[in-house]
Amino acid sequence: ITRADKKKYFECIIRGYRYSALLGCAMAVILVCAPVIRIRRITKKNIAKSMDMHIAGNGNIYVMDEIRKSLRKIGISSTIKIPSKFYSLPTKMLNGIMKELFNYVSDRELYVAGEKINVYLNSTDIMLEGKPDVVEKVQSAIVKGFVENNIFLTNSKNSQKIEFEIFNTYNKWKNNDEAGNEAIGMLRNLANTAFEEDMTYNERALLSVQINEVQNNILA
Image (cartoon, rainbow, N blue to C red; front, side, top):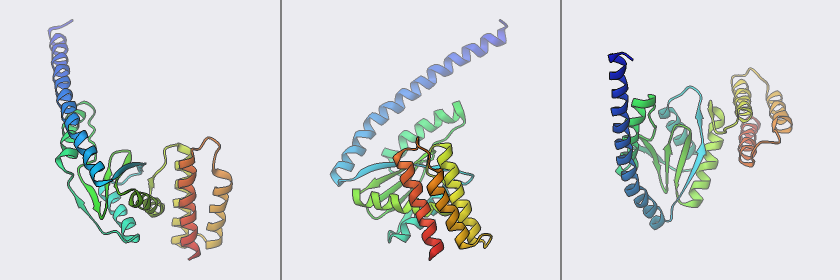
């Protein structure tokens, strides 16, 4: 082993201790922040619910704009805000470590705030926080709103393939590349043949809502 190799080995050990110390500090902060967040939810009688989301080529500001459009359709005005320290501080601490190790940064730098609802964006999911009835209403609105965009709300490859077909069919009809009856036939074929037995109930329900929404848009 050369002197240069020994130096690199020693530097790796030192960095390991440093990362361990930083992670320990981050965990200590989370232990303080997490109960505060929970207590605030309980006192306000709020719940938190996550939705899968996989962005296909667009940034999170774009996704936030789409979420705000979905909220407007159900009568909820919204703004983009910076999260409170209880949300942002642990994330920033972990981001510093993740950026150095994996060149990865979490996305909860901003969030969408509406009446009785907050929508936080992470790298692979959307977290809804608010009154139970509003959370359900907003979740449905987001699913309906995203049928026009290349954003996947399912996990499995087969489900995402169906989501793409729904978007593609809608886009062809909207651009007059496909007649309405042809598009409706394609969507009905997807609903009848594309759903696989190993799909989860949530995936089936979500895809059914998207297909129904596109059909309603075309028929209208």
